[in-house]
Image (cartoon, rainbow, N blue to C red; front, side, top):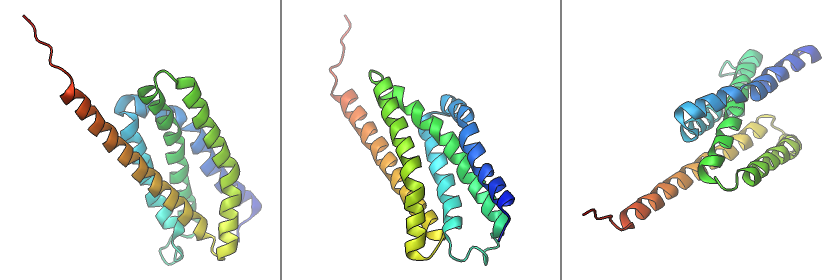
Length: 171
């Protein structure tokens, strides 16, 4: 129920921060570390996506402008998150930065290619446009849980490695 020009403007309010905030995300990741930034990105996205996935958006007072603000938040988080993910690569794969960076880029491109039609399919098959946001919320939640479990596992293996290392005796 909005004009094509307004729809394009709302789309741009997602696309521009998702693209232009990568340098800021890199700066944040350099300053605070990629894990903290990525956790923040996932939590911010989940909060906005939860609002967007609600079938009672209008009763929540979201409306068109609230929808645009929530999508802007998702776009900002995605832009910042792109850089934080790339910051992980040299930290965890220092000998394979090029290969892993290429793999991450490929997965991002495939996601950008396959997810929009998938979200369209989900919306059409459920009859609910909010279902796509619910799917994105679920995908983000699984990613956050996976990240957390990986970090916990890495920390545990680091503790085991440091406690089982032989002590150096100085004379």
